[in-house]
Image 1: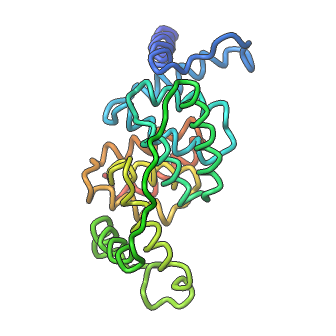
Image 2: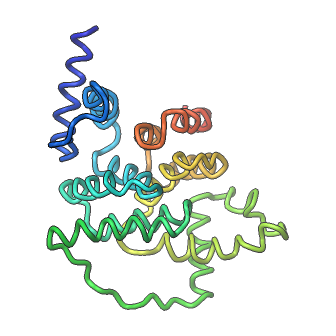
Length: 253
Protein backbone atom coordinates (compact mmCIF):
# COMPACT_ATOMS: atom_id res chain seq x y z
CA UNK A 1 0.00 0.00 0.00
CA UNK A 2 2.81 2.39 0.82
CA UNK A 3 4.34 1.72 -2.60
CA UNK A 4 1.02 2.51 -4.30
CA UNK A 5 0.68 5.78 -2.44
CA UNK A 6 4.26 6.73 -3.21
CA UNK A 7 3.66 6.06 -6.89
CA UNK A 8 0.51 8.19 -6.86
CA UNK A 9 2.42 11.00 -5.16
CA UNK A 10 5.22 10.70 -7.70
CA UNK A 11 2.79 10.81 -10.59
CA UNK A 12 0.90 13.68 -8.98
CA UNK A 13 4.12 15.66 -8.61
CA UNK A 14 4.80 15.10 -12.32
CA UNK A 15 1.32 16.27 -13.30
CA UNK A 16 1.63 19.29 -11.03
CA UNK A 17 4.95 20.22 -12.64
CA UNK A 18 3.53 19.71 -16.13
CA UNK A 19 0.76 22.13 -15.25
CA UNK A 20 3.22 24.62 -13.75
CA UNK A 21 1.38 24.50 -10.43
CA UNK A 22 4.17 23.24 -8.21
CA UNK A 23 4.99 25.22 -5.10
CA UNK A 24 8.38 26.83 -5.22
CA UNK A 25 10.46 28.63 -2.63
CA UNK A 26 8.13 28.98 0.35
CA UNK A 27 7.98 26.44 3.14
CA UNK A 28 5.08 24.02 3.41
CA UNK A 29 1.96 25.30 5.12
CA UNK A 30 2.01 22.20 7.34
CA UNK A 31 4.03 18.98 7.42
CA UNK A 32 3.60 16.69 4.40
CA UNK A 33 0.98 18.94 2.84
CA UNK A 34 2.67 18.92 -0.57
CA UNK A 35 2.71 15.12 -0.60
CA UNK A 36 -0.97 15.11 0.27
CA UNK A 37 -1.91 17.57 -2.49
CA UNK A 38 0.23 15.73 -5.03
CA UNK A 39 -1.46 12.46 -4.15
CA UNK A 40 -5.06 13.59 -3.77
CA UNK A 41 -5.49 16.50 -6.17
CA UNK A 42 -2.97 15.92 -8.94
CA UNK A 43 -2.37 12.18 -8.92
CA UNK A 44 -5.90 11.29 -7.83
CA UNK A 45 -7.99 13.82 -9.77
CA UNK A 46 -6.10 15.84 -12.39
CA UNK A 47 -4.67 12.61 -13.82
CA UNK A 48 -8.02 10.84 -14.10
CA UNK A 49 -9.27 9.81 -17.57
CA UNK A 50 -12.44 10.90 -19.40
CA UNK A 51 -11.91 14.68 -19.28
CA UNK A 52 -9.16 16.59 -21.06
CA UNK A 53 -6.84 18.77 -19.02
CA UNK A 54 -8.02 21.94 -20.76
CA UNK A 55 -11.58 21.06 -19.74
CA UNK A 56 -10.44 20.34 -16.19
CA UNK A 57 -8.78 23.73 -16.14
CA UNK A 58 -12.00 25.41 -17.28
CA UNK A 59 -13.83 23.77 -14.37
CA UNK A 60 -11.08 24.76 -11.95
CA UNK A 61 -10.99 28.38 -13.12
CA UNK A 62 -14.76 28.57 -12.73
CA UNK A 63 -14.50 27.50 -9.09
CA UNK A 64 -11.45 29.60 -8.20
CA UNK A 65 -12.94 32.64 -9.90
CA UNK A 66 -15.93 32.52 -7.57
CA UNK A 67 -13.88 33.00 -4.41
CA UNK A 68 -11.21 35.25 -2.93
CA UNK A 69 -8.28 33.11 -4.05
CA UNK A 70 -6.17 35.59 -6.01
CA UNK A 71 -2.86 33.80 -5.47
CA UNK A 72 -4.18 30.43 -6.58
CA UNK A 73 -6.15 32.01 -9.40
CA UNK A 74 -3.09 33.84 -10.72
CA UNK A 75 -1.10 30.59 -10.87
CA UNK A 76 -3.94 28.73 -12.58
CA UNK A 77 -4.48 31.46 -15.18
CA UNK A 78 -0.80 31.14 -16.11
CA UNK A 79 -1.21 27.37 -16.32
CA UNK A 80 -4.33 27.77 -18.47
CA UNK A 81 -2.35 29.86 -20.96
CA UNK A 82 0.33 27.18 -21.04
CA UNK A 83 -2.35 24.58 -21.76
CA UNK A 84 -3.40 26.58 -24.80
CA UNK A 85 -6.55 28.26 -23.50
CA UNK A 86 -6.98 31.61 -25.21
CA UNK A 87 -7.04 34.71 -23.00
CA UNK A 88 -10.59 35.48 -24.12
CA UNK A 89 -11.64 31.96 -23.20
CA UNK A 90 -10.24 32.43 -19.69
CA UNK A 91 -12.10 35.70 -19.24
CA UNK A 92 -15.33 34.19 -20.51
CA UNK A 93 -15.09 31.46 -17.89
CA UNK A 94 -15.28 34.20 -15.26
CA UNK A 95 -18.12 35.92 -17.13
CA UNK A 96 -20.19 32.74 -17.30
CA UNK A 97 -19.47 31.79 -13.68
CA UNK A 98 -20.45 35.29 -12.59
CA UNK A 99 -23.97 34.66 -13.83
CA UNK A 100 -24.25 32.06 -11.08
CA UNK A 101 -22.06 33.48 -8.31
CA UNK A 102 -22.45 37.21 -8.90
CA UNK A 103 -20.74 39.46 -11.42
CA UNK A 104 -18.62 41.03 -8.70
CA UNK A 105 -16.64 37.79 -8.89
CA UNK A 106 -16.22 38.27 -12.63
CA UNK A 107 -14.64 41.67 -12.16
CA UNK A 108 -12.27 40.48 -9.43
CA UNK A 109 -11.18 37.35 -11.30
CA UNK A 110 -10.75 39.15 -14.61
CA UNK A 111 -8.50 41.75 -12.98
CA UNK A 112 -6.27 38.99 -11.64
CA UNK A 113 -6.17 37.41 -15.10
CA UNK A 114 -5.28 40.74 -16.70
CA UNK A 115 -2.27 41.00 -14.37
CA UNK A 116 -1.05 37.63 -15.68
CA UNK A 117 -1.71 38.65 -19.28
CA UNK A 118 0.20 41.91 -18.81
CA UNK A 119 3.18 40.11 -17.27
CA UNK A 120 3.29 37.86 -20.33
CA UNK A 121 2.76 40.59 -22.86
CA UNK A 122 -0.66 39.24 -23.82
CA UNK A 123 -3.31 41.70 -24.93
CA UNK A 124 -7.02 41.31 -25.61
CA UNK A 125 -8.09 43.03 -28.85
CA UNK A 126 -10.89 45.57 -28.38
CA UNK A 127 -14.33 44.64 -29.62
CA UNK A 128 -17.27 46.66 -30.86
CA UNK A 129 -20.10 47.05 -28.33
CA UNK A 130 -22.74 44.34 -28.50
CA UNK A 131 -25.85 46.02 -29.85
CA UNK A 132 -28.42 43.27 -30.32
CA UNK A 133 -31.96 44.47 -29.65
CA UNK A 134 -33.92 43.19 -26.67
CA UNK A 135 -36.18 41.33 -29.08
CA UNK A 136 -33.19 39.56 -30.65
CA UNK A 137 -31.78 38.67 -27.23
CA UNK A 138 -35.13 37.33 -26.05
CA UNK A 139 -35.53 35.15 -29.13
CA UNK A 140 -31.99 33.84 -28.90
CA UNK A 141 -32.47 33.22 -25.18
CA UNK A 142 -35.54 31.08 -25.79
CA UNK A 143 -33.76 29.24 -28.61
CA UNK A 144 -30.78 28.46 -26.37
CA UNK A 145 -33.07 27.32 -23.55
CA UNK A 146 -34.85 24.95 -25.92
CA UNK A 147 -31.55 23.60 -27.21
CA UNK A 148 -30.20 23.01 -23.72
CA UNK A 149 -33.24 21.92 -21.77
CA UNK A 150 -35.82 20.70 -24.27
CA UNK A 151 -39.20 20.12 -22.65
CA UNK A 152 -37.76 21.11 -19.23
CA UNK A 153 -37.02 24.66 -20.39
CA UNK A 154 -40.24 26.07 -18.93
CA UNK A 155 -40.45 24.11 -15.69
CA UNK A 156 -39.99 25.19 -12.08
CA UNK A 157 -38.89 28.78 -11.62
CA UNK A 158 -38.88 29.13 -15.43
CA UNK A 159 -42.61 28.48 -15.68
CA UNK A 160 -44.20 31.33 -17.69
CA UNK A 161 -47.21 31.59 -15.36
CA UNK A 162 -45.23 32.08 -12.16
CA UNK A 163 -45.88 35.70 -11.20
CA UNK A 164 -43.20 35.66 -8.49
CA UNK A 165 -40.19 34.26 -10.37
CA UNK A 166 -41.53 36.00 -13.47
CA UNK A 167 -40.40 39.30 -11.96
CA UNK A 168 -36.77 38.25 -12.60
CA UNK A 169 -36.67 35.29 -14.95
CA UNK A 170 -37.22 37.25 -18.20
CA UNK A 171 -33.93 39.01 -17.45
CA UNK A 172 -32.26 35.63 -16.98
CA UNK A 173 -33.55 34.57 -20.39
CA UNK A 174 -32.47 37.80 -22.06
CA UNK A 175 -29.06 38.30 -20.51
CA UNK A 176 -28.13 34.81 -19.35
CA UNK A 177 -29.20 32.63 -22.24
CA UNK A 178 -29.61 35.33 -24.88
CA UNK A 179 -26.42 37.31 -24.24
CA UNK A 180 -23.89 35.25 -22.27
CA UNK A 181 -24.42 31.90 -23.97
CA UNK A 182 -23.84 33.63 -27.31
CA UNK A 183 -20.68 35.55 -26.49
CA UNK A 184 -17.43 34.63 -28.25
CA UNK A 185 -14.62 32.85 -26.44
CA UNK A 186 -16.48 29.79 -25.14
CA UNK A 187 -18.70 27.39 -27.03
CA UNK A 188 -21.84 25.91 -25.51
CA UNK A 189 -20.08 22.75 -24.39
CA UNK A 190 -17.45 24.76 -22.50
CA UNK A 191 -20.07 27.05 -20.97
CA UNK A 192 -21.88 23.97 -19.74
CA UNK A 193 -18.68 22.80 -18.02
CA UNK A 194 -18.48 26.18 -16.30
CA UNK A 195 -22.11 25.92 -15.23
CA UNK A 196 -21.71 22.40 -13.82
CA UNK A 197 -18.57 23.33 -11.91
CA UNK A 198 -20.05 26.56 -10.57
CA UNK A 199 -23.34 24.98 -9.48
CA UNK A 200 -21.42 22.22 -7.70
CA UNK A 201 -19.10 24.66 -5.93
CA UNK A 202 -21.98 26.92 -4.90
CA UNK A 203 -24.19 24.04 -3.75
CA UNK A 204 -26.97 25.02 -6.18
CA UNK A 205 -28.59 21.60 -6.37
CA UNK A 206 -31.71 22.55 -8.34
CA UNK A 207 -29.66 24.16 -11.08
CA UNK A 208 -27.09 21.34 -11.12
CA UNK A 209 -29.81 18.72 -11.52
CA UNK A 210 -31.33 20.63 -14.43
CA UNK A 211 -28.08 21.42 -16.22
CA UNK A 212 -26.53 18.04 -15.50
CA UNK A 213 -29.22 16.44 -17.63
CA UNK A 214 -29.01 19.21 -20.23
CA UNK A 215 -25.26 18.70 -20.62
CA UNK A 216 -26.00 15.50 -22.49
CA UNK A 217 -28.03 17.48 -25.04
CA UNK A 218 -25.04 19.51 -26.24
CA UNK A 219 -22.37 16.88 -26.65
CA UNK A 220 -20.98 16.20 -23.18
CA UNK A 221 -20.71 12.53 -22.31
CA UNK A 222 -21.95 11.18 -18.99
CA UNK A 223 -18.36 10.44 -17.99
CA UNK A 224 -17.35 14.04 -18.72
CA UNK A 225 -20.14 15.43 -16.54
CA UNK A 226 -19.05 13.15 -13.70
CA UNK A 227 -15.42 14.24 -14.09
CA UNK A 228 -16.38 17.93 -14.20
CA UNK A 229 -18.03 17.52 -10.80
CA UNK A 230 -15.14 15.49 -9.41
CA UNK A 231 -12.68 18.16 -10.57
CA UNK A 232 -14.24 20.66 -8.18
CA UNK A 233 -13.50 18.49 -5.14
CA UNK A 234 -10.05 19.86 -4.19
CA UNK A 235 -11.17 23.46 -4.73
CA UNK A 236 -14.63 23.76 -3.19
CA UNK A 237 -14.72 20.62 -1.05
CA UNK A 238 -15.38 16.92 -1.48
CA UNK A 239 -18.82 17.05 0.25
CA UNK A 240 -20.25 19.38 -2.39
CA UNK A 241 -18.78 17.25 -5.18
CA UNK A 242 -20.24 14.11 -3.60
CA UNK A 243 -23.61 15.81 -3.17
CA UNK A 244 -23.53 16.78 -6.84
CA UNK A 245 -22.69 13.26 -7.95
CA UNK A 246 -25.42 11.82 -5.75
CA UNK A 247 -27.92 14.32 -7.16
CA UNK A 248 -27.16 13.18 -10.72
CA UNK A 249 -26.80 9.47 -9.97
CA UNK A 250 -30.02 8.51 -11.74
CA UNK A 251 -29.34 10.79 -14.72
CA UNK A 252 -25.77 9.62 -15.23
CA UNK A 253 -25.95 5.91 -14.36
